[in-house]
Image (tube, rainbow, N blue to C red):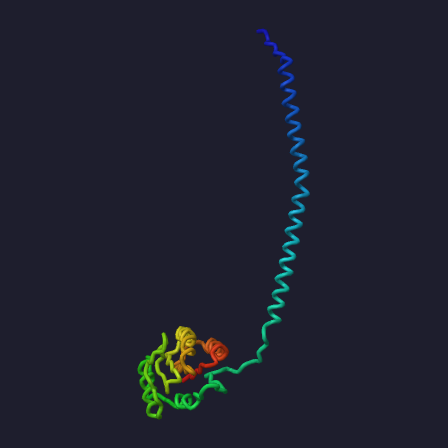
Length: 212
């Protein structure tokens, strides 16, 4: 059987194929040129990023040092049980505080209301003018003595009870000369209580805390 002879391309076909080959070569050359041009740009971007990282870390280091240096240094404090202001600019609640400290309930109370009632009777027997849940604005403490001192009783005193006292102090200290917080049967962590008590003494100069 005779072998078929391969057809020779025409002149036009040869020219077209050559043009395609030239185009492919130009395309590859262009890719190489573009890739070579992008490499320095990538290096510049990487260098800018690393420089930015170093500047940011230096900024954080400086801010951290300035913040630490700006904190006041407090001397060590002894554990506290009650907070009573030493000086009073408006009126002196210390006689009232002394009467509260003298109070000893006849029995251990598991609820606030019986304790409040017993303390109320005790103060009246001592000659104090004691009102019960008198309202001023949106504030209504458990007792008001002589129209000047608000008394708030909490107990058994848990961490949650301490949280509510902070909210009441924000309001009560605007209405009365002093706010006396009477805490009985404290059941929270002692370290937490001492930290809370220091916070009260720093933030509420018109507040008095008496722990029973």
